[in-house]
Image: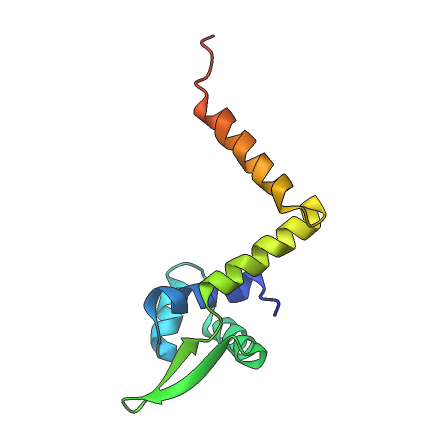
Amino acid sequence: MRITEAESVVLGALWRHGPLSFADLIAEVRARSDWGDATIKTLLHRLMQKGAVRSEKAEGRQRYRPILDRRTYVEAEIDDLVARLFGGDRAALRQVLEDDRATSATPAAPD
C-alpha cells in the first residue's frame, strides 16, 4: 500500500493519539499543518479506501482508527528508499548511515 507524505500526516496523528473523532483529528492535523477541513477529509477518505484507516462507532461517536501500523509503514518506506537509491541493497544504506555517524561524531578541526 502506497501512502503519500500528506496521508502520513493524518496517520501520524492517529498513531500518536489512538482513535480520534473527526473533530479531534482535524485539530491534531491542523496543529502541524495549515490544511483546511476539506483537505483533511479527503486524505482521511483516501486512507480509508486504501484500508489504512477505518471508522468505528464508540460511545455514540464516530472514531477513526489506524489499521496500518507504524512499523509496517516505516519498513515499507525504508524498502522504497533502499530500492530507489541503493538498488535494493540495505547494506549500502547501512554503510552510508555508519559513515555519516562517524563523520558527525568526529570533532571539527580548529581553524
